[in-house]
Image (cartoon, rainbow, N blue to C red; front, side):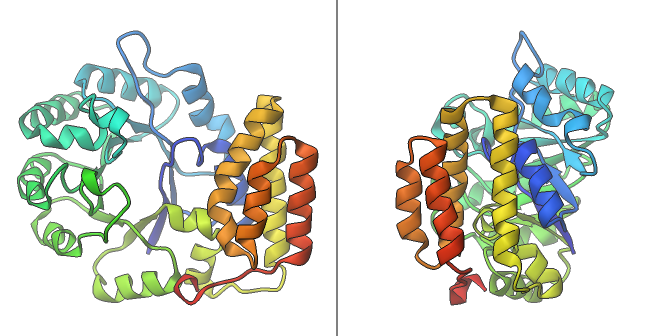
Length: 319
């Protein structure tokens, strides 16, 4: 099985990726949060810093592009190829309203004819491999059956399917009926993404879909960085709470080295703790205190107590 880490905007940037690779690893491909080109610039300074090869040493990184303009996509892909990237990923999955209303992300799925023309243009001019991360439609799962006909026209490196529609956001259960149909209908390799939050989730999926050899993890890794370790080797050593502590300390340190702004660094750390707090006994109690921290002193005091007084706690559904 190949294991991928999903691109989560504002969270899984190079600071997180490097720390994760150092303390946990086991990821075959990291996907960078999307680059959003426009008529003035392909890759802005912040986006470029995130995908610079020197900031991602030792990682197999795939930059992601989100646009509905084929020229913007092709120009950005060429710029990325000059940085050494031989694969880019098209975002057809983002469900955010601010994206969807611009006919981007999963909003583009509602315009299949325009999407078809867009794909024709980008594959005709491609500089390297193009993979696609998609949802199964915007308003109805039935939309997928026309979409897969379109996808089948093109030599997509991998079709990563999150089997929800845009309107689901991250609610409801993934539509495994449509995913099963995708496996039988697709001419391209299929990768699964969606709600693998525990070894139980993984084992159930792997047993039912033994022909799927690649899975993309997202929120499951943010909630439990040990998840792939446990899946692969049953990693459950007594040092795991220290590893989490070192992992989070390194992220804090590197964010500050890059941003030099206490307020913004605290905001980034709180984003992570929103997911991570459920990993600890009394995690909710500590999360409320972390959320209220106004400076590094208050933050470090709470986090230090958490690591001294708490233990890793796996609910049955999170084992």
